[in-house]
Image 1 (cartoon, rainbow, N blue to C red):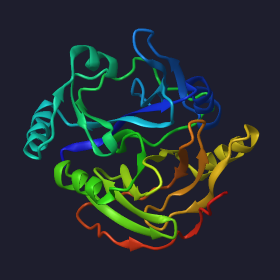
Image 2: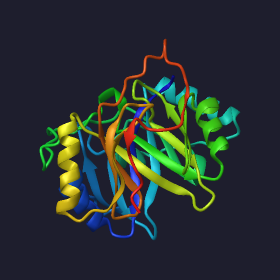
Image 3: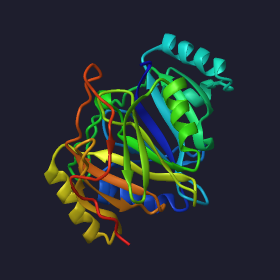
Length: 286
């Protein structure tokens, strides 16, 4: 596997200020203002990286950029060859783009759902320690930011691209009454991206922010009541990745999952299976 982890995501939202306040007061991310020279309104920190998410103004809410971290410049070159052999147009990130992402090198292309997808190496770490305004510790490190789950009517096309071209593994599949999820991984985190078939619309289903304990999940759930945040799904535990979590609706309309205790995948022994139910909970909220 050449891709190491989910490095960062760009988020579009009709109200970046409201989303930034939600990130600070409900999720526990550190919020920093974006530079006036570009369209980034806010940058969001959750660890030693300079940012893991950023917010731009957009008519509808959702992920606009997905950035995958690779090991080194050689890996960039190898992935570029694979992409071009698959007929994908690849562009080299400009010096200005690399400075904005705070990386040494980057290439980008249009991935599934028409989302700008970036491969980068040499991330410049922040000079200051991350301090959550709510005292929250997030699980990142070699596992990256968390995961993103996308809705599309062209699920198999997206899964094939990530597995056959980008080299992800199919961790497993889940057949639920509301849809079939395909979970794809690139490191010990069970999945860094997933796709669910949707004939109604295409876009972002949710982003995971994993915390270090069930108590942190419970505190986040309490904060949804304090700040009148609508739930998408109740507290529960997934059968496939073991995540103890709940889902809430962000100010941009898509979901944020707050969870703890996700399983670690051992590539040498992992077997992909099909799940049909969670262990308990995660009931949809109307």
